[in-house]
Length: 266
Image (cartoon, rainbow, N blue to C red; front, side):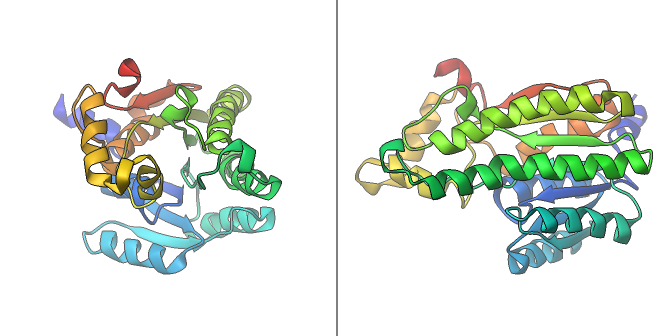
């Protein structure tokens, strides 16, 4: 049984793109997929950080490469998909992880801030999905698309209207993509993390920390999570792995909350 399960979870020979895969949740996802045998392409605008992560993971025997992309630019996204398909000769997995979340209440939010957030957090996943899926269809690959959503689609917070709106859109896009690409054997699913300690989430945690004591605020938050702790980035990666493996090949159009039961107590 263990041998069968190992075969079902093995991603050896598959090629994955992980946007924003250089740090935080993206790094956790890249680590897990690479450990499962996939050739992971870290797609990031911060090429220096991407190379650093690729070197770190590659030192552990994983096959990890980088590809530069500006997710606010359609031509850059198109070229990214083309470059990966050319270099790796195939594309099996797309993980739309990259997102920005500049804290800003609606009353103070400029149109530029709204547009920039939606461009990266929703428009870009639409474009990466479209170009990646077309590549999969051309190559007759029954690929996997996994979008990273958020617990914020269930519980919103002041100052996060733009981010929360994009994540609501991500879940709708996931279901639409699942329906449209099903005839080609391509699945589309989403993972919605709860509280995850990452460099990117620190600014938001600082905003909600009374008196600026982030550690105290983090401890108080842990008390509200039924499992009693924050998630590790790799634990989000495990859910992504499930969707990408043969174990999850009959699952599409779904959203999994990886939140330690946080949603139950909100």
